Image 1: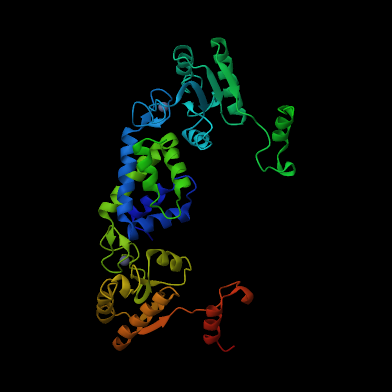
Image 2 (image 1 turned 90 degrees about the horizontal axis):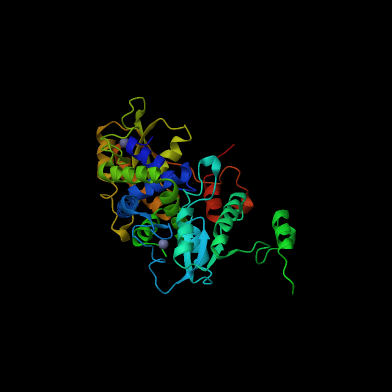
Length: 197
Length: 197
Ligand SMILES: [Zn+2]
Ligand SMILES: [Zn+2]
């Protein structure tokens, strides 16, 4: 029922996470009927981002500049480094306003099956950073998944010989979490990590 | 926390209907981290659609060709015309498989306050069509809203003098609708439109 270019637009909108055939159709018609300015801006910003966005030379997060805004901020404490899997994790930790150091963004986790080893995550660069730039404390905030744990373990083993203070963010029952609804694995970790009062 | 081009991409994704700041951020990071091919295809198809998609010369729906796929299909009954507000409404009616005629897509409804009068909806073209092309039956399927009703009324008055059989799709209780939950206005219309059994 749609002409080829509209069909192609609908199809290509489906690359967006969470967008199924129905919403892709709705989006395409909305843009063409009512917001060609917005569509134009989107086409342009996609093109620009694709052409120019690369990785921060220091922390490896996504940016079009040599250094991302956080690495470029000389108010941050460069002796503390928080290691996360993705740029979205940086946002999550920043939103706590509890961390004043710098980040190192793996853009993934160790996954030998997908050919993702230490080099792909930039761990050689991380080791150099720890050795040379005077990083004193490293907080590992990879995901609480099997892969996140394995990656955390690998990094801890790699950094400890360099005399860095390496820690892992705590695992346990989330705030407001009712024990009844917390899964057994989380509960086991919460028990194991209990603190004396 | 994001570099300017990434911020701009996030902002511009918000022109999509149903996309708030959180999902725009998620989409931008997803495209840049994991699907630059999809992003490239999207940028390209947006550009193409913006440059080339216009309106069908006959029914006014969106298409990059002179005639949309439905108007170009000579298997359709050209003596019947269904009038709808948007291309999405065409899809909705096509999905019933109960209509074999052609469409006329207003791309809106009468709205004097927004400066949308008969010309903006192409009603002059519709009148010509009814007079010259041998349209015998017109089914008005504008929305059951105040504006849709006003538009329907206007079109009916315009076409009747030309001896066209003009009808309006039925209004009433939707299939599976429990009376208890149907709003009063709909119920009033359902009563008024009752059929003898
Ligand atoms: Zn950086
Ligand atoms: Zn058409």
